[in-house]
Image (cartoon, rainbow, N blue to C red; front, side, top):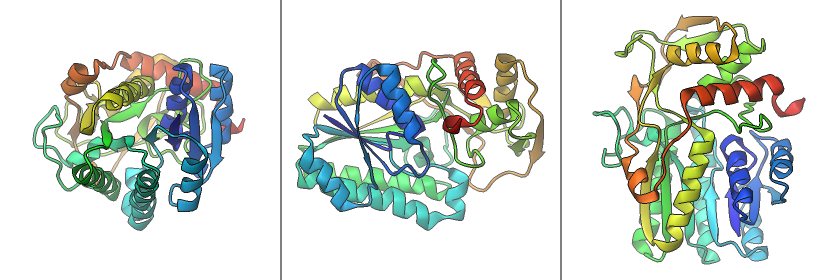
Length: 337
């Protein structure tokens, strides 16, 4: 049985679908702060299978201990956490509390109940502003440019130290690049509370008329069109990578880290044009000042995941756009309609 923290969220709900389709039994723990129970209901409808849902917080040790006590958990997939780079620079303590303290409580409960397998959702932000591109796992972690990235680096360090102290643990750390897209049913997708912090949901909300225009933060980066370049990866490719990592740590002890990305980057304006094409809409945008903590370019070398996990990102930028548009156009108000 798998414990999936943050399983009602954007990536977590797609992970839940993949787990249920793969015949895993799943307990979902989510506090529904940035997510909706509707996503769980839709996943159960899509898969025609049920999960066990617990509404609770990973910072609550009593809640965690009751789950490990009641259910025979074999491994944990840890998605719970706050994830907005911009917000983290404004509210660093909130991010430290949720992402670091929450992960600490989770690991302490796991240790107490001898559950020693975990897949952790980390981020390419742990590389800071990289010296070289593409970024491989050999690139040194450097001080991240924002508190969100710092929380991911801190949890990675905790996991490394846990494995060092007790080599019977199996830990997979997955450093995501930029997850986008939605399940191709259009039933589940990214549903941010309030103003979207990520590029593609913002573009999609402009396309359905919820927002007037896109704000593009900076156009004087050293890139082909002056806007920031990121490695966008389809959320279904991402969750398939998690499933491969979970299979790997069942048979391999120790600490393992993999990048999950496509290996190529697209600029903000590339994304705007691709979305306009997929949705047959016009996306007005305005260039504004750069944001604190943003870097010019970031894209992955995912060779290690290819070699060790036999995992490849298979979905194209067109797939990402079409699936996002299908989700957004069918659910203009997200899960609330």
